[in-house]
Image (cartoon, rainbow, N blue to C red; front, side, top):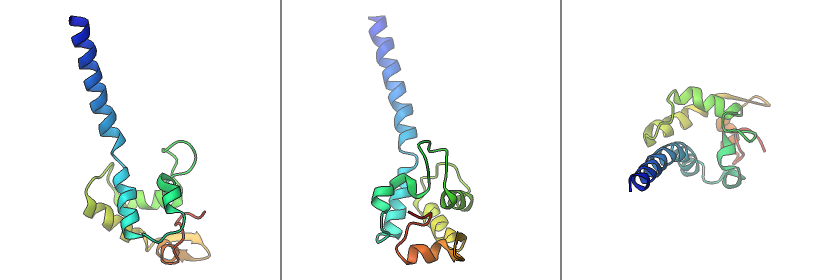
Length: 113
């Protein structure tokens, strides 16, 4: 009985940690899709709008610019996320002198294809 109770307690605790870390960033992409619904390839890129490679620790140039603008770790505040997305538009993208806002206005992914 003690073993079953301990196992159940561990499972519940683990599930709580897994849920809290798993839902930390989908809010970013959700708000991105709402603000820029016509960006070609965004639905396929998902997390790679801001990330590159296999590890989510690796951010592309847009992800780094957005992260510096957001200036919060794992924010779930929709208004804070929207403001950071809007403020990131003014930053230089490194693509032919265009800002991220220019690229997004052309319905292109901000970090390229």
